[in-house]
Length: 327
Image (cartoon, rainbow, N blue to C red):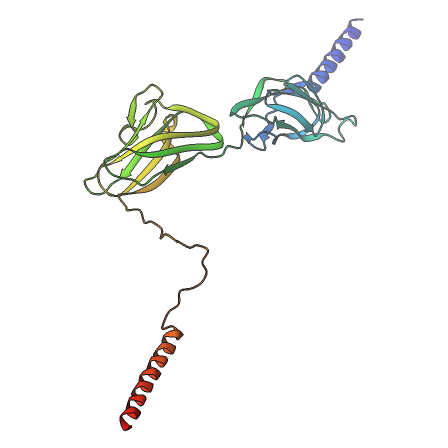
């Protein structure tokens, strides 16, 4: 009896050891997860690629995403989506003949977004086993995070500098500055600053009055609050400035739109040269615009006829006078 009990304990220990070996847990440290792009425009797709680094016979991965920014499109394995989680499921029914070494899942950025939206895909997993289920891998409970930026296809800002009349010195000359973009990147703190090249000894002031009624010299101190102003989206703004030139000559104005949040990086620039005191050249006045007859040049043929006739009369008079003397 004692001998039989010892045999039972021995075989039980062997069985437990075998089961323990078959379900040994290990981290899936060969897993690699990458995105096809880190910046997505509205309506474009991004794919998450999973490379397991070894064959797997079973797994369940959950991918959490922002439903305000993305929608699920497709995957290379069985998938279901509920709320902001897409569940990717795989099981090899052959018992190891058809393991998976990789998979992918694709999401599409929603259309109509007008601002930049940094977001994340958060990935967890459970039920991971190798091809013959001899190794059960640790669940991934701490999310693996992959960052992605969803933003519109921004179009750069354009600065236009125009004047409506002939420029004169010592008076206020209207100068318009237009900043526009059909879809400009959003900025919180922009400023408009200026640089000018003048004739020797001359000065140029570019004056503007803000919404609070304060006058600023754009060339001297820039335009906008020292901390900057916000701008973004569909933009079309025109500032009606006044330029005062102290002398006649050519003045070159450069305007830079700078980002105070990024070391005053120039995001747009424009240059224009103003000619001050240049006289206006008036077009000649056309009295008969419909007259197509070219003016005659040279001597008219009637002049010749008159000269011949006058010569004939003189000769005739002289001839008659001589005949009268004979008689």
